Image 1 (cartoon, one colour):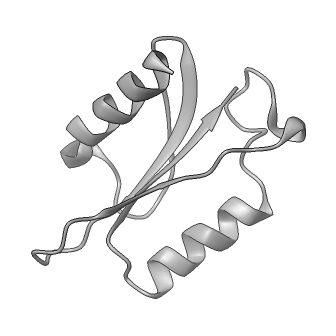
Image 2 (cartoon, rainbow, N blue to C red; image 1 turned 120 degrees about the vertical axis):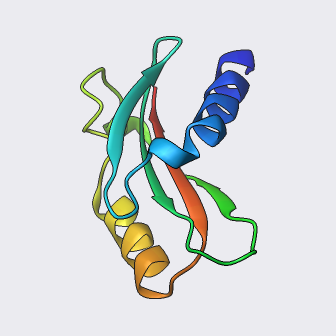
Length: 91
């Protein structure tokens, strides 16, 4: 739990360095994850969206957790200009 909290805090701190449209693979304290930033330019606080994969997403390649559901959520966020920080960790 503490590692996951550290991951979330570190991800929020690096918002400025993230791509606005694409997922970026990252590793923090041994936890692999992908992150997509869709912050926008308004005064609205971005939502934190965390997708927790099922058993088929397990591994250490930081790609297996990326599935069609993740793609659909990312498409919705971008299409509707939802201010969000989208995290997809891999266990």
